[in-house]
Image (tube, rainbow, N blue to C red; front, side, top):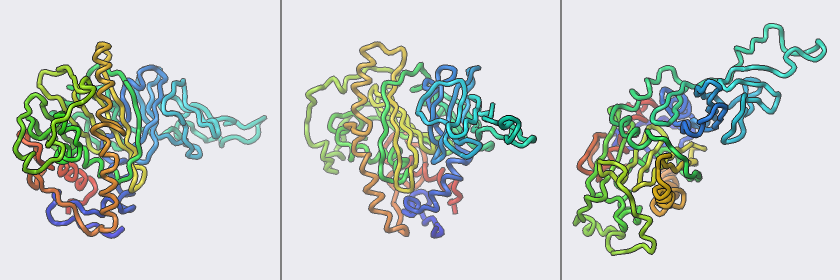
Length: 410
């Protein structure tokens, strides 16, 4: 790795080297993904029953999440203590225990080793040594904690309590959207050809939303001339961006900036797509909430979704989408949520562009590691702003956390 020297300008400058350097990518696996950080694992509703199993990832590390016979949730590395093979091969399963297919080492749903095939040999010959202790050969555990139906995990004993890590404002908004009996309406994933941090920037970037996503502007789903704001957590790592559709007052800047999608009056042949009911009293109709490093919670009209993204190499990221409703929804409300799921996702009317735009950045920056991005829209600091979303404050907040945990502050 060429030694990284962060350019002058702090979090308003980002060296392109961080998006393409394999050594930095390897360092992230240790300092961020295996460091003192809480990571999204799954939804509690995905492991609702005793014996339920869900496999997932923390960075490049494969992880198993289970609910045991007592109803307790556990998480452990999906790696047999014997030869290192994957123990669970399915995304979802329900079993009384976990067995490695290679040599049949068997583990409880808490990850503790229960039995080893031929531990005592065959007919008194062979087998494990007399001092073999199954208690010393469990699946590597993670700490777990839950908030608003979401299960988080961390490898570090130094990670603060979950709600302390999130902060009061972030926790409160998370519960606003998610602390309900959740129902999964659909899932899918896509591979995007860029470094994972470019997507972390993208979901914090309210500046691009009204420019790149023409559907937003044309059909007045989310625009900068609606009331809204940016809220950063106390640590600056996490953020909320929100807008209120009913408060739209067309701004002259849309004309002077020649925003293409604001030039025309258009109509949908299926206008029911944009019909919505008031689910909350605060008038917020669009919100993006991020939790450092790789979790996104989205509410667009009534379409509620969890997104989480997994690094698959220095220039490749897998993005997962989980579309949600509440168990208390009426059939009409559920149908509306499903219809509005077409707004986002891999081929969404709004999110389609995000599947390719950061590959343009990846391709444009990889040959210039000594250059840096210029991130000064709305200033140079990472601070909340509840009067304007014409800002890159939340992007700067991500880099504030990244530099801190990676040791790139200097």
